[in-house]
Image (cartoon, rainbow, N blue to C red):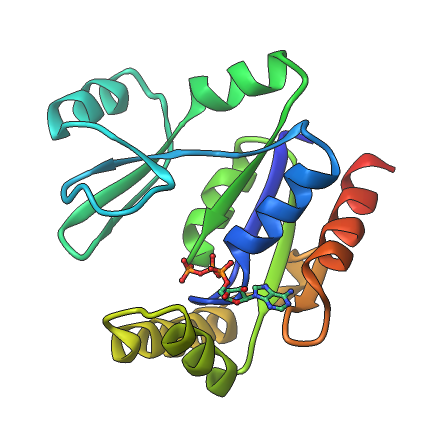
Length: 178
Ligand SMILES: Nc1ncnc2c1ncn2[C@@H]1O[C@H](COP(=O)(O)OP(=O)(O)OP(=O)(O)O)[C@@H](O)[C@H]1O
C-alpha cells in the first residue's frame, strides 16, 4: 500500500486521527500537500504557482484541487520518497474525485471519517473556527459528494463521535499493516 487516505468533512477528526496514528507508530506521517495561494494552514508546504506549473508539466501532480482561490496538490515524488524510507503517508482529502485520482496511481487504504452535522458545528465552535458557517457548508458538500459516488470504495468507515482517536488509529493501523 502507498499509504492512507483520510476522507471526511470539517472537524471529522482527520488531524486528530493522524496524530494518534503517529503516536502509535512513527512510520505513519502526515503527508504535507503543496499549496499555492494564501499562506494559511499548518499542514501544507507553501509553493508558488510557477513551481506548481513546473511539477504539473513534469507529470508529478497526482491530484490537484482548486478551491477558495487556492490550489492544493499532491506531488508524486514526495509520496515515493516517503515510501522508500519505509514510512506510510497519511493524506487528508475533502472530495472523492481527488481520492479516485490518487487511487488510480496506486493502492491506498481509503478511510471515511464521519461526524453528524450538529457534532461538526459543536466541534467547530469549540475549537474557535472563525467561520463555522463555512465549515457547515463544506459538511453539506461532503454529504453530496458521498451521495454522488460509490461509498463502497472505503475499506473503513469510522464515526469519530463514537470512536476515540486511539481506537480509530488502532483500526486503521490494523487494516494497513495486517
Ligand atoms: N475520535 C475522536 N473522538 C473525540 N473527539 C475527536 C475525535 N476526533 C477528533 N475529535 C475532536 O474534534 C475536533 C476536530 O478534529 P480535527 O481538527 O482533527 O478534525 P479535521 O477533520 O482535521 O478538521 P478540518 O478538516 O476542519 O481541519 C477536535 O477538537 C478534536 O479534539
